[in-house]
Image (cartoon, rainbow, N blue to C red; front, side, top):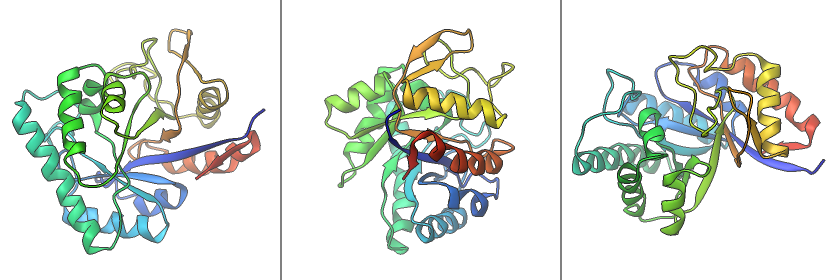
Length: 246
């Protein structure tokens, strides 16, 4: 079995208050920056934690929709969405500047992430936001998605992401949270789920079909109820299967 190196990330600053527990286990994090959650206080606290633990810092912008936690597609003009995303990322960049820390990547949140995976118009708005930032930035996106293909055409550095704690449909979209078994909680299932993606580059969809997938960063959602236990388990178990986290 070949040796592999992966990144483990989590969405943080979303009001769970568990960042001090999670961040020591992560190699990168995605900080909510005001669209669905997050404010100056939480962003500053999480940036300091991440910096102290040498965790790569990403912006986690969203549809500007606190009411629905960014998990509903929003009817918004392209210009307004661009402006909101740019403003969210700038707010985090200002804090990073104040704390002498660097922005490593951008990962859209929730409905925005899922829509950009299949909708060219939405994907292009996000790509234009990334292009407007005057420094090289990684973009965390799903494998074989519309946004990943457009980003690569625009010479934007792409990191393929997969989800440790979520089930997949056969088309590689995430199983809706409204459905039973959308979220994985059992440590052993999550480990097998990740190992298949790392070593065989395949994921077993919820209908039992194996689907090709590539990923070098794996997300454990910060608001999954046992996120800390999942991360603790993975950090201990993955090295036993020739997987290094960095």
